[in-house]
Length: 563
Image (cartoon, rainbow, N blue to C red):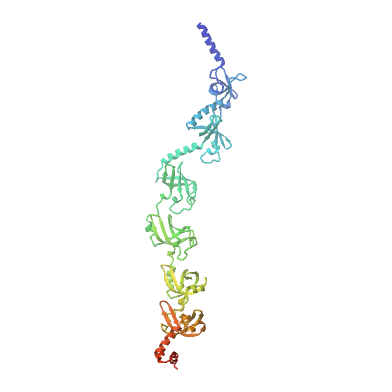
């Protein structure tokens, strides 16, 4: 009985062997042995005398030069156990692809880098062989910066980071840039750890911008700002630096979070501002070169690294609202005076006009009060005239100094811009930069030359104008003028008619007001008649004595005329 069972087991084993190994399943990766190589084909035995043929090219690939030989054990993909010729249909490419996908999925899940070879260029990027699996490398993910020539990157083993995987569609997207950025960040971190603030180090100018230069410190860049290149004013970095130039710099500041490094060159040199107050004392004069012109003034370089500002208000004594560029020009050498020094703020205030004589002082030295000058009418305002005088200064004639008798508001209309007129210097105020002039003073003060004119005096007047309200008269022998109102033309109302007088006619009148301080004079014919009547009555009698007023006045008149 046992012999029969043994025979059955042996038969079953032989039957299994005849039908092949149990693990030989179509669509699976199996191991095989290279038993022969014929031309460009490898004969592979996958067990139980089941053999298949695989092209030798499937064992090669981008970045792989590993020829097989008889006796090597390889993994292949079993597409069919047996074809029409009784051979197994095998594929090394599919086996490698299956194997790669398993490894790549693990790497993708663990966020690990994978190794691959860029072997072809396609629209929008490149194809990468990841040990059998083909991935897409977008052009934007090739490098940190756009590169023109990718030939050096082709057909070389290098690391990639998987960005996206879709096994169902067979899509893999990888990035080389991510790997470079991580590597660069690690390198930057390591380099930054070895640097210290205040350290002096050499570097190479890598790039130049309007605001400074980027210096390569051996794998990490630092910014050398334009204001830290030199103590003197540098308008553009190219004035001092060139790309590729080796420079010695000082590390000013390190930001360990952003890995940003600020550099300086001038910090390696002596500070020219030390002891600046002793070097440039206030009120001392120096020569310098204009380096920059702005709306508010001009900067002057006194020495390399030391600049001072001439504010627009300190540029000219007379040109007040003029752009500094119309007074000085860039690179011009000028003499300046130190007005203020502030070492803490690194500021020096300079003056240009202080090196020239104050034009108001010069005018005052040349023209004392009372001197007669001549000038052109520059402007007319509500309070007077401005005349242009010697030394490019202006003098003002106030309305009250235009005419002795007429109001200034009326007289100023007689002047036009551009007229050349004479005036008398009344006062020169150097501190306030003012020159007071007078035009009426040219004719002398009529009140000062009034002679015997005083209140109560009888004066002879000449009619200069006849108006409805009275007459304008001039006191004979003086430059005084007065206006006699209608009510003051006669004692009797019927005689108070201005039209009974004519221009050029002379008449006597009594001075009723003479005020030198207030510059006022008033005369009245009526007051004179009343005064004469009182005097006659007192001297020749009164009406109560029987004499008529006509008799009294007649007697007085005869007495006055000598009849």
